[in-house]
Length: 134
Image (cartoon, rainbow, N blue to C red; front, side, top):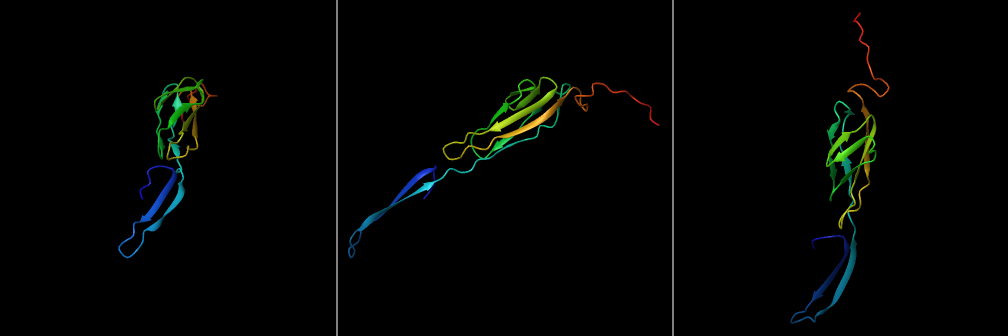
């Protein structure tokens, strides 16, 4: 038996008999083939800043097609697998997979990153004052 898809599988066994035996009565059995578990992972996208506003994302799944969505379009957008910062704030991306005829929908995964004004500075620090080494 080769399983092709989820659903109900019905098997009927027959025996046509032989010279010394009568044909056997057909026996049918059914069983359910459940959909498999589907998982989604989303790569970390490190950091984003207004000086370096783009990052590539990688989503992997057990089966099917994963959709990436920005949950914070005020701060970041997506084009394919590339996230682009729009302004300082928190960017959150969700990866989801609806499943298919053989796999259940995957649990969605979200990742967030804080977008800074300049690499290495938090939102609350907009400038640095240099000091002389001691």
